[in-house]
Structure formats: structure tokens, C-alpha cells
Amino acid sequence: MKYAFLKQLLLAIAIWFWAVILNTILGTIYLVAINFDTAGNLLECGIFYGAIFSFPIMITILIIIITYTANNKKGARLFNTVFITSIVLTVIASVLFWKLVYVRGIVMGLVLMCITIVSGIISLMTFYKRLVQLGGDFRTA
Image 1 (cartoon, rainbow, N blue to C red):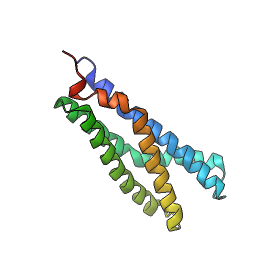
Image 2: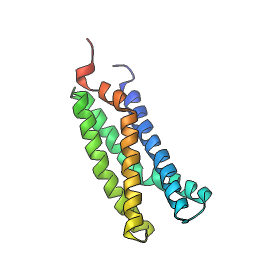
Image 3: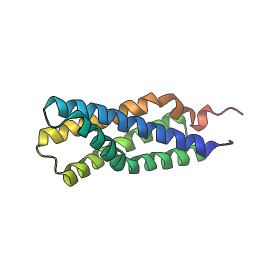
């Protein structure tokens, strides 16, 4: 398929971009609601830290997409693998963020982790059809 890698790369970047934006918006709403900081500061930090900590997840998703499409795996299997892998890696990235930024309080850390997971899931579901269509079972001769 002509331009296959470009399509796969753009899809991985789109999933990553929407996850970072959703995480920033939802995280900012939560942190402003508990009077943690101002919205402007939180938006800047959210985009920066969200992009940095989730970039390895985007690379992993891209590798999975490339591998599964090259092996003509079913689209549903591709989606399931990306879905499960992204949740596991999101939990790991959230814990690393929690430790490196010194998030205080288990409740705040868990809420931020849940926001991150929900943002990733919404982003993946937004691109569900495009992701499944990359699978080998949707190719026409």
C-alpha cells in the first residue's frame, strides 16, 4: 500500500495528540476545582508533561500498528492489543509522573491516573474505526 507508513504514523500521532489534549483539559478542570493552581499554569504544565510522559506510549502504539499491519492481523485484534498496551503503559507513566513530580496524596494521584486512563481510552475510541481498518481483515484485493 502506497504511503502506508505515513498513514500509520499520522494515526498514532492523532491518538497521542487527542489523549494529551483531553488529559490536559480534564486534569486542569480537576486541579482548578480543588484550588491547586491557576488554569493558565496548569494548561502549560499539562501539555508539556502530558506530551513528554506519553511520547513513549505513542511510539509503542506506532510499533504495534506497523507490526500488526505488516503481518495482516485482524483489525479487532490490533485494536485490542493497542487498547490493553496503552492502558498498562499509561498506568506505568502515571506512576513515574507521580514519583518524579512528587504528587502529594494518594487520592490526587489516583484521580490524575484515572483522568489519564480515561483520556487515553476516549482518544482510542475516537479513532477506533481508522485503527480497525488498518487490520488485514479489512483489506480488499
